[in-house]
Image 1 (tube, rainbow over the protein chains, first blue to last red):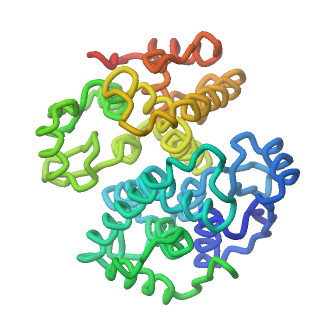
Image 2: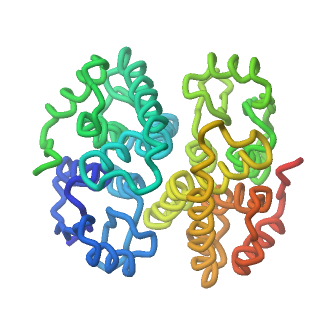
Length: 199
Length: 199
């Protein structure tokens, strides 16, 4: 059975749980409490890249990077299109998520709701908040004329961007400013086999 | 013919040129001078995500995100393995590059060698430098027991990570501390059809 090394509130972990649920793939959740320093140190000693999630296969092979895990699991399913151009669109959104969305929306949420602002990094907060709103604005523009991000079907691009977007309010962001984004969030929450981040 | 919207010194652009050369795909380079503010504004007005590179296809379709472009162009070639696990490894490195490597090594290089440190962001420099050395350390550890990053063959994972690693000295980083990384850099430079960033 697959094992998912997982921290509950992490959107990067949640996006993988969302896909595993959609695909009805059974797996074992191996929780790691990132707020507990010794547990975190032990995890970092075991996994070189030091981050959650890590997917562990039956044969012990390990895969890090949430969006790489999504691509691996979604291969050959409707959540990762076969069409070369549509695949490229999915990947574009996945890379954009890690560079232009997660470092702002997820990091501000993590600092505000879970870990506090690391000492000496207070000056980064205004810029990160501004970039977060820019990212939400990009999504709003896209979703004003689209049902889903990468094609006309629900894909791992939506799952990946949904993970931190739908809890952006925990970072203090006002999602009500983005009506098309809010409709897309509701659309994803209404998908069959959807699970919540707190499940 | 393909058109590549391109800024010469950008490693994100260079990695695409490296792959296009390896695949012997003809293309037109459309230079954009990011040091020229009006040119930059015009570019941002045209391309919503506002970044280089953008690949423009024959039919006018446009693809952003350097690593998504690599995957798109490498599909069906030896530079992106068909094996599902090896593909996942390539993607793991591509996502890691955008999250843990580029924001530190490329950004410090850009600030030091091309654009200056943006006003008010001086405090970020020590942390970004430390993270850059951590990223170089991760690569060194990997390359101590491997020829290439994702499999036993040269792939787009190597191209992507080579792009900013081999010019890290322009960011003030001492590459000589990382002998396995230096051997890997020489190995890539010796590949057939290799082009330089300044070509």
